[in-house]
Structure formats: structure tokens, C-alpha cells
Amino acid sequence: MPVSVRNTPAAEWDKNTWPPLEDLARNQPESGVWFQGTEIHNRKKDLGTATATWFADLLSPDPWFKSLFSDFKEIPKSDLKEGVDNATSFTSVCINTAIYLPWLVSQCLKNGVVFKRAILKHIADAASPGVHHSGQAADLILNCTGLASHKLGGVEDKLMYPARGQIVLVRNEADKMYSISGTDDGSEEVMYIMTRAAGGGTVLGGCYQKGNWESQHDPSLAIRIMKRCVDMCPKLTNGKGIEHLDVVRHGVGLRPCREGGARIEKEKVNGIWVVVSNLLSVLNTANRSHNSTTMAMLAQDIKALMDVHRRQSNWSKRR
Ligand SMILES: Cc1cc2nc3c(=O)[nH]c(=O)nc-3n(C[C@H](O)[C@H](O)[C@H](O)COP(=O)(O)OP(=O)(O)OC[C@H]3O[C@@H](n4cnc5c(N)ncnc54)[C@H](O)[C@@H]3O)c2cc1C
Image 1 (cartoon, rainbow, N blue to C red):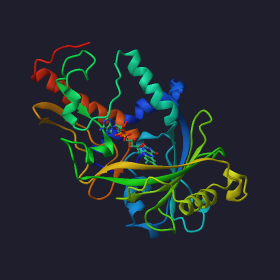
Image 2 (image 1 turned 90 degrees about the vertical axis):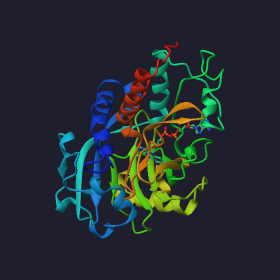
Image 3 (image 1 turned 30 degrees about the vertical axis):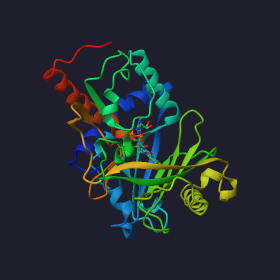
Image 4 (image 1 turned 90 degrees about the horizontal axis):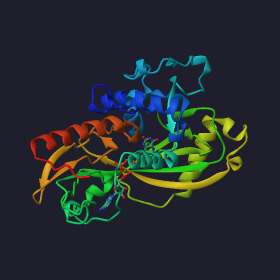
């Protein structure tokens, strides 16, 4: 679901990310990306709330991404539930990240990437001799540590903050992806439904709790999430109650966000060049975000910055 805002770099990243995602869904099912019908519902009364602000363009009957989807349309008012003022539908993609991330690792391995695993206390430690597989010190570090950039030595970006999300993963399936501008359970609570490819179950969400670092799931929020989702999509339980949801697990995650938006720049830390790309779940001051599906083209901007570095320095070609 494209949540970027018109005329922002994030919208440009989203626009350019769509063709590769579409290609994966069409031609590479082993990536865990598949097409899903999508319905976005809007209630005017949510205007100005955290969720409606986050989803601002997504909720519009005329969003910037309208022309990307050939089947984009407004849902007739007569088909909408009471209380919903307008809604749109289009075919997007849903990523089963449990498949997609290992698939990305495989693509990297195929292309000669060498993986090593370590916990670093300071970003410059990534250039210590012995960390790079060549045995030499690295000349360039790419920092993509997400929310950890808040605390990581040499970075300590205090503009970073979490937007806590909570989900329920169920075995039940929905016919489409759904979301709505708000809920009646508080401005930070959200409703979304995403059925994942290859038997990955359905993700029921959620919430968007800015500044909340709590890692444990809240059982009463989980009940509200399940109720809202079954209410939006009764097919999940064949018209029955939430006790007919077959729960796989509850999940909590902290979206990496940053006041002022993404920071993609090059800086020297302890004499080592670091390309900063923290973060990948970006908020601007108006509380608008983009997310991991935006990343293919954000990564291209990062690569461009690294290429400039390579040209400007005599970057040794290490294998
Ligand atoms: C509940 C929830 C729902 C979401 N839903 C969606 C969605 O539907 N669509 C979407 O596109 N996005 C969604 N997101 C957002 C998405 O998950 C994030 O945008 C994305 O994971 C950010 O990726 P990243 O690589 O920047 O950061 P991360 O995934 O946080 O990766 C950072 C990496 O850095 C490593 N690291 C950190 N510190 C150190 C250190 N000191 N030393 C070594 N390694 C370190 C970590 O181990 C980690 O591997 C959701 C997030 C949440 C929480």
C-alpha cells in the first residue's frame, strides 16, 4: 500500500519501486511477492488523526499513484459500509517477507556478496581490520541499522524514534488487502489485513504508536485488532466471530522512523566514510511515512552516492 505523499522523494521512490515489484509478482513467485486486490476505505471524521495523516494520499480518491494501477477505481458509495465516506480499489502486491528476505539473501549470494555477522558498538568498528572479508580495513561503510541508529556509537541520531506496531498472524485467509483511515479505538489504532503468498497466513494489524518502545504484545489490543478486521472482512471467519480466527502468533515490531525524513548522505566518522541510509521507514514532520516496499529505489539513491564515492576516491577493487 503506497503511503508516500505526493511530490516527495518517497513518492518518487514508490513510483520507481512499483515496476520491479510488479515484475517479481508476475515472473518470480519464488520471491514471495504476489498480486493482491486492495481496498482502502476513508471516513471523513478521521481527518487530522495520526492514521489519516499517515495515510493522507492513500485515502484520497485521487492519489498520486492512481495512474500506476490500471484497475484503480473508486468504489461506488452504494457498496460502502455505513460510516465510510469513500473508498478506492486497485491491484497491488503483498510481500511474504518470510520468503522474500531469504530470497534476497540468495540473490546476493548468487552475485558474490560475502555475508558476515557481528554486533558493532560503534559504526567505525565496521572498518576494523578483519571485519571485511578481504582481511583489509573497509574504505566505505553503509549504515542501514534502522532504529538502532538512535543508539549506535558514532551515529546516535536522536531524531530516530519507533512507531510501534502490533499484529496478529492467523491461518484464515482474506479475499483482498484492506485498510481504513481510522478506528473508533483511538487515534493510534489502525486496521489492515494482508494475506501473504504461499500459505504465509494473514497479517491482521495494527497500531502506529509513535515513541512507544514496548516489545511485548498487548492482549487487549490484540482483541481489538481481531474484532476490527473481522468487522471489515467477515469472510475471514465465514461470517462468524473472532473466536473462529486461527491464531498462529502475535507480533510486535518497532518501525524505524525519523523526524524530518530519510537521511541519505555521506559523512566521515573517525576518518572513515560512512553512507548513512538510516532509515528505511521514514516519517517527515507531518508524520507521513514510507516503508520497506519503497526501498528498491531508495537503494538506488544510496548506490548512486556510493558510486560517487568510488569515483572520487581511488576505491580499491576488492573481491
Ligand atoms: C508491525 C509492522 C508492520 C509493518 N508493515 C509493513 C508493511 O506492510 N509494508 C512495508 O513496506 N513495511 C512495513 N513495516 C516497516 C518495515 O518493517 C521497515 O520499514 C523495514 O523493516 C526497515 O528495514 P531496515 O532494513 O531499514 O531496518 P531493519 O529491518 O530494522 O534492519 C536493521 C538491521 O540492522 C541490524 N543492526 C542494528 N544495529 C546493529 C549493530 N549495532 N550491529 C550490527 N547490526 C545491527 C539489525 O540486526 C537489523 O538486521 C512494518 C513494520 C512493523 C513493525
